[in-house]
Figure (cartoon, rainbow, N blue to C red):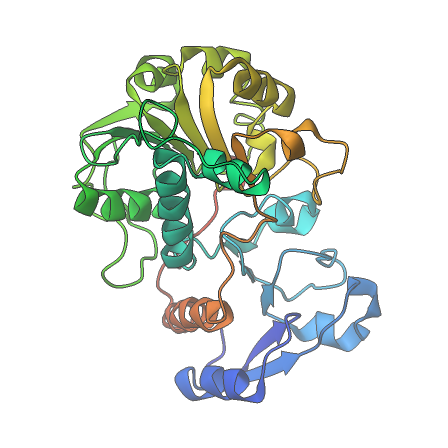
Amino acid sequence: MDEKKPLEVLSTIELSEAQQEYIKNQVKNTHLTVVSAKEAANLPKDVWEKAEVLLTSGHNLPSREQAPALKWIQVSFAGVERALEYPISSAPGIMLTSASGVRVSQLGEYALMALLALSHKLPKAIQAQREKKWLPNYGDTLMPQELRESTVGIVGYGSIGREVARLLYAFGATVLAAKRNVMQPEDNGYNAQGLGDPKGNYFRRLYPIEGLPGMLPECDFVVLALPLTKETYHLFSDKMFESMKPGAGFVNIARGGLVDEASLVSALKSGRLGGAVLDVFEQEPLPPESPLWNLPNVIITPHVSGISPKLMDAVLELFVKNLQRYQAGEPLYNLVDTSKGY
């Protein structure tokens, strides 16, 4: 990169004037262009041709021919499956980075909220409220499964799973974690200061994904935080649900495609699962005819576990750090292995 020539940065995400000034003030010798366009074809030809760095939501990426100078694509989400649908993401000479580690605070809080709701039988209480029914406060109807001294399985021990584990540690829960590479218990990706579990201190045992049938029977609750790839599609189907502890709680804050929803419905109806909090679904919005809507032991939210009024500022903090590393010729945070999908 010629240091005398400004680095051409293109954002197809709308940025406020303050956000644009933040980038310009933090990263010198850059020329920032912000053009909001739903389709890549709507952008002027010369805008694509000169862009070297692209900040994007991962939608409507250009072809390699449209963006011949492009070298790096920064996606504003932790999951990059949409971006990988575009050939340019895995083209030679292109680096693709995710926003992994940016959303961990709000996702961790959502997961904790979900676990507390399940542990204190909130779905039953809400259903009784709708029916104007005063449930007895004795027996097993509303008897909680306290997080303290319970076992929580976290499937996917990336930045999100590690933040959930950090929060659970304060509650006295035992954390069992599963990840693809158990030989790498530490996290070398981007982490906001004080969040997550970069050293791998908060789990009791670490399992490979193939070891889930041995881990799940021990878990009172299971939190799904895996990326969606060809290998993880419908990972949770009949076999996985049947291996879970009877009455266990299930939380999905990752991707709907990780779960066979027919198997999930069956497990919830049969009592194999005691309840579920679901924020993601294979089809979004969740169709009105989905049986999940009517199950009394389910809480549904419309893919909100990662949203925050401060989210874009957090994404830009990561982007700025990566821009600085890019200019210095240093390795970028959250570089995606396109062959793995994350």
